[in-house]
Length: 329
Image (cartoon, rainbow, N blue to C red; front, side, top):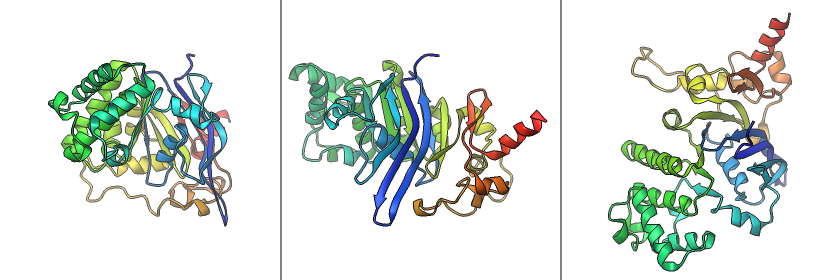
């Protein structure tokens, strides 16, 4: 098997507090192959954005990686010094944040920010860096890029600012792009454009994408595989079409059932009772057990690990362990 571009193994992220240590990510594992788009979905608080922040070394204090490892093309990066991690971030891993205004400095023109990023990571002259910056803006769909590059971020609409952020993320030709809710707060037509820009830009450069979102429609249109997170753990992971059409984990089934379809005849959408547990109140056993209609004793006692289901699918649910036990009998 070829070495995956990104390999995350048993990643644990904790937040020490006066009342004890809160575990926000609990042994999260997944791989991303070269050129692959991996979608990551789940409710707010599931740990999606935190996973992305841990990978690129941008955890907010007092958050810390307390276990596991992150490897980029086989090279471990979670234990790098801040200076070495800065060289990885931007050059080998690009980041598209949810709010473009947090990524763009309002005091500097788009040209200044793009050129600085390019020259930080690539050995180019000011003139060549500017030419490259204009080409990036043109590639992500900024009209009249040669003129608009000297505008400030507030001169752009929300959708155009997000395009600028994508250009920044791609400036140094990274191997991996982590896109954290890149279409939030944008209208539907602009969402589709932004996703197309991200996909096309990465296909051209052969980059992989980790797409963090709560929008299953975006995942269905964009991703090759999808990982479903719940309470800081991977509940299910597999090819996106298989997971969407035949979800196996009860939580994933609930998410899929909450998506309206043109052929739906029911009066109400599927609803998952209850809410995501707080970090200081994760239940024993499977974290989803208080909300699950299939719960049985083992679910309340033991926490399931990911179980291989064939076809590249894995699910963390004791229902399928029981099925295997029955098959063995």
